[in-house]
Length: 357
Ligand code: NAD
Image (cartoon, rainbow, N blue to C red):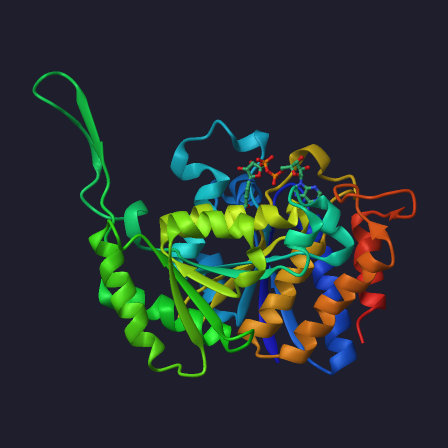
């Protein structure tokens, strides 16, 4: 039995999470599993109820669960609140409270959606990359940081890129473990020709690799990686990199697929992980049954694979998504031609269930 906490959030969040929960229910029935799901509030929905975007009780519930599924947070209603009271603070709060240090962003190009990419079909077709980004260290958190006044009246803004051995070790280890569930190739991305923190990064990753002799390790400078992702994305399997580089490269890799409604993600800690679609709460289409639920369904597939070790079950969900697209069903955000059939969020979920076996 697996305990899942769902945090639907705001906008299209509740719509896509509800559909994903239906898919999980169907998976449980098909594969004789038990998923005990509980729902709680986060983001704007929590602000409306409790006056803040994340309450301690929800953190406790998350800690007691085996995995957390989140929809999306935010919307115009809460935009003018102060920073720490905004819906997004709930998201940062739960990531911090659960110690989620590894962010996983797969970028997979589906044959039936290959035309949605801004790159040529022959370049992107078959791309299947997993970007593993360090999430709690590096320049976003390093100290000292700030903006200071100089004596001549000008100002100076500064941040610190800093990584310690344990921080690099644990993210590298995670990347090698994940590679074992894929093509067993890790490309570590750094800037060790310029940055000392990257020199240490490369040394530590190389050391960790010795414990994974079955996984092939390569190193690449970040500027080259940005080029190679566009030039020949198929060369990559797992990319592991720092917080700043991962932030940029994961968005670049995502754009190879050309479709925000298709992108799942996971944030992992030592024991717990939180799964969520990459997209936001899309207030422009909320409540209209127009949202694409596939990113959230694919986030559930990641949960089955990474949190519950149900690799075959996860693959059957991924295959059902592939099949539904091959069969010509599209939500309004996906590229389509005359032969495709437009469906809503709920119907898309039902069609996926139909194809899970
Ligand atoms: P967004 O991702 O919500 O929407 C961007 C565009 O993509 C919109 O046109 C939207 O309709 C479309 N879109 C997004 N997801 C879709 C889906 N599943 N199906 C179909 N179309 C989809 O980004 P935004 O408009 O910049 O932000 C809206 C709100 O979401 C803001 O309050 C922002 O802060 C928040 N946000 C939250 C998260 C999160 O919860 N992780 C991430 C990004 C943005």
